[in-house]
Image 1 (tube, rainbow over the protein chains, first blue to last red):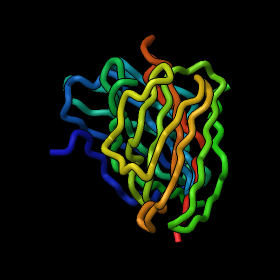
Image 2: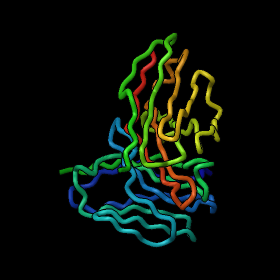
Image 3: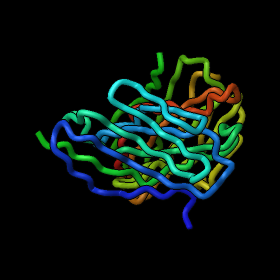
Image 4: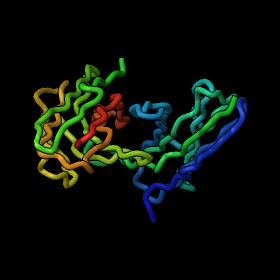
Length: 113
Length: 114
């Protein structure tokens, strides 16, 4: 079993739809959870960062963490064509600079006008 | 300012060339990273520098040689690369401790080895 599982998609939705992206993980030592957005041929851009169970909202984006189920989600409301990108979940244990940031495989999202 | 800069943006090199990739951040972060990313794959960690000391080397071949001249700069020296080393090379930085394990990535250098 991989440490982090993420459905690679691709996921195609119409403009304005609510998008749900998910990752599951097996290592209970993970404490910090991140979502990155990566446009084609660009570096990953940090979207959301959480460290506790619950929801965190930033504009159209909501990150949700359920540590008891080892499950994280990213919701995108009112999706736009500019949201078309690959979304990577990532997580790390405490003191992560001495260890690896563990990525999911990424989900490729396409938002159609 | 959460910017990490990388130069060059693109690099084409032959298998006998020596080249260097450069990374810079001015966020005061004391951890810096090199990653390699192949198409349709997540980034793979290569090296970690923490307080200017190499703390992690993920069994990377010696044809890749990292260097951290100071807390803001990170270099990756390349020598005798193979075509399979063609990839996007990403630099990232973070602040150790303080719950700041969030890593900020640069735009990457797209490397093609001929």
